[in-house]
Image 1: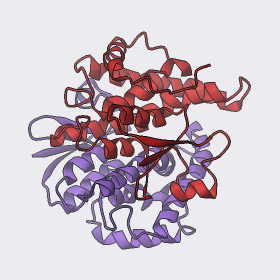
Image 2 (image 1 turned 45 degrees about the vertical axis):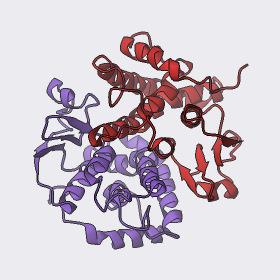
Image 3 (image 1 turned 180 degrees about the horizontal axis):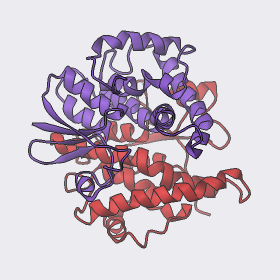
Image 4 (image 1 turned 180 degrees about the vertical axis):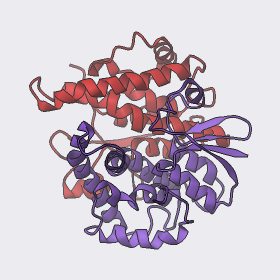
Length: 202
Length: 202
């Protein structure tokens, strides 16, 4: 059976939880408290030398890190990755966009707001990060004004990767109202939501 | 024929130039002056709404962005991507590591040092970025102490992706001497170097 090392509040972890639910794949879930430094212990670094969750352990004891690489591994051969060469690369294009141009500016503000007190020096990062978060949303908006999904004309792991932090972007201070096509896409892909938890209910 | 929109000094562009040389694939090369804002024109944004190079134009007029997605597209079916499912995902794991944990801290310092004057406020970013650049090199070092390549036990596009900015990391102020396994890997993969230019010779 698969084992997922994860943290409930992580959108990167949520991507994997959502795909596993869509695939009806059973797995063991192990919470790793990133706030308490549990990804920096020698025991965890032996699983993933980059010290990050999510990390997936396969039945044979191998480990795989990086949320979008885990999505690719799990979705291979399923309907969530297209077969056509260019469409496959376009799925990857949007997943690399997500990690480079979106996650640091949409996910990290949410993390700062949720985990650092109002007087923390980390809060000083927020304005510059939110400017780039709006730029990422504008790139998504331009694409979604002409396309219903990110690649292959249908719901793929590119949509899962971008849904994870976009649907909770308001928690980091990003107002989605100006991005009408993004909002319509969120509503469109919400039907795939399997009510997987992203955050503990208060 | 393929057209590569690119900027000579870009390591992300260099990845594509190196793979195309290894594949003996002919292509048209179009320089886009990122310093002069040529990736922000309406004409270029129509090719890539995220306004970044490299961007690849296929023979049919489709566009593909994100250097590592372009590597995947070009290498599919070649010796530079393995066939085995886990090894393929491990190639992606290292390419996502490269974009999230390596490029902003190894490539961006080089960009700042090369393109911003000594009194530029951007220089203030250097110390914090270089700390994380050393952390990325330490993760590579730990892996390369036990492995000759990043995935599949052989040279793949994961090595191309990480070679691009690592072999010029000193230009951004990173000393590779403490990373002996990284240094040995650079020497090992240098045989694949096709003397593709990364920077105009002075």
